[in-house]
Length: 379
Image 1: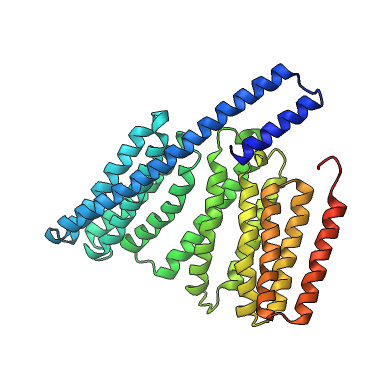
Image 2: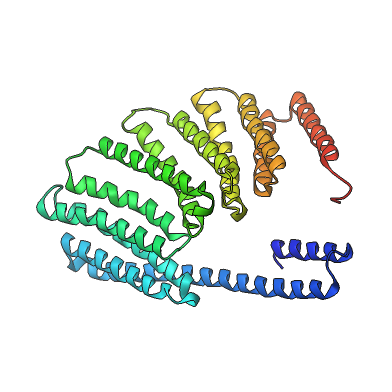
């Protein structure tokens, strides 16, 4: 029995005991919930099997390439990889229309995109940049992500548009690298602009109220864009900006990501009930642990005390926000973000008397807060 199902069954039991629903309704709800849980378990099993199948397929492709690779030149290898990517993607798209095969379709399309990206990267060895063939092959990199994103959005797939967007940035960088004279730094700036524009569009969709219906993919694409942003910020800081330490830039993006997530949760009629933004915020809270620690210890060259104070202080703020809003995933993440830095500081303190006293006082404060926050009805 899953945690979610257990919570639902407990709620049904409370409603029955309080005479909110009768016994017949209670039995019907229990039966419906049991069927739903079985279906969810079966779907999860499908995704596990499909992912394993995709991994085996990639292994088989690797074995084939190991056998055929020595007999092919670089052009042949590029064409072989591209052909395999198209074939695998086409197989996944064909299976998508069959509901029972959706997990296999998803895994195949992911594998196909990976093979296509590999082919475009390998084409560097086949033709020199800005040559006729490199320009033509690079230009086709614009067609691939556009087609994939358009198709996955049209089919109302909730996950693939975000993944295709992330891969699309890779295809876009390959196009500029192979077909244009832009430098590496210029390409990074262009990708930054695309990311910012896309994030603004997705944010608009998420706050569109009734207009959001049928656009569930936007939430996952927004989450993906937040993750991709950390990669691009690192590349921008260490590349065009020539920063030796990108931590402050990453902190700024983290703050922006948190702000956008909180704004999305607070927006009127935003789809917060889907839980996606709550889990995104929980991940961002957990991400503050390494970011905050590294910023204080490495960038600011401060001791463990300040790092613990900064990270745990952020965790307290996250807890207060989540407690007021009723966001359980964020509450759990805030608790972890509060305890881990304190634990690390205590270990580093090596059992110092002051450290023990501070930990004891902190534990006492937490117990006191738990008692003040609790209620008889919730027990």
